[in-house]
Image (cartoon, rainbow, N blue to C red; front, top):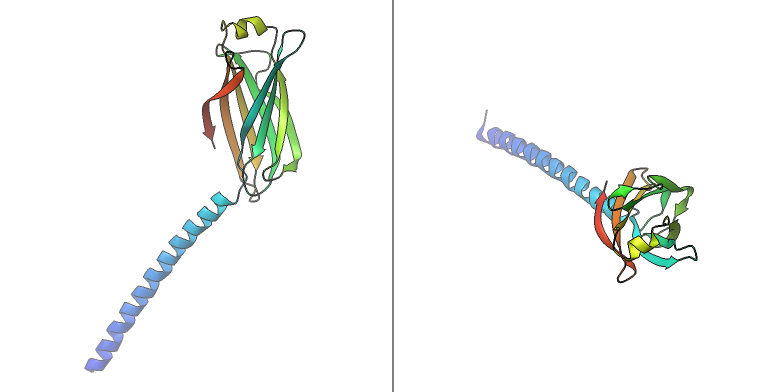
Length: 169
């Protein structure tokens, strides 16, 4: 065994180690890049706005606009809601409003219409707090299922809803 053989063998071991390390790091960075791409290129559905009116029978009429804020379409969109008076569910508990096999395209808005029971005066006078909890489930291009749950509270002094809480899955 010559000195040159030992040097070549050592250089080969170092080279194999370096190649293995580069391969592991490349795999890690590829996964990070994939996650960044998937986060940037997916649907993000949420509540955009509310319109609040009343009808002749003194019901509060609520038009809820929800929007796909993401960059790709959402499919199999399911919207359900729960209307709460002072934290208690009414007749509308977990009512599914919209079950679509079609797509909700990027930046497009859909709406749902809700109507309260006959508690108009009590809500307007502040006797009851009116909360609406909206749950939206949908799929993206990868068929991953996403869910957003948002809670909104009606402010009778300003005739609008303000955001209380949200969770994403």
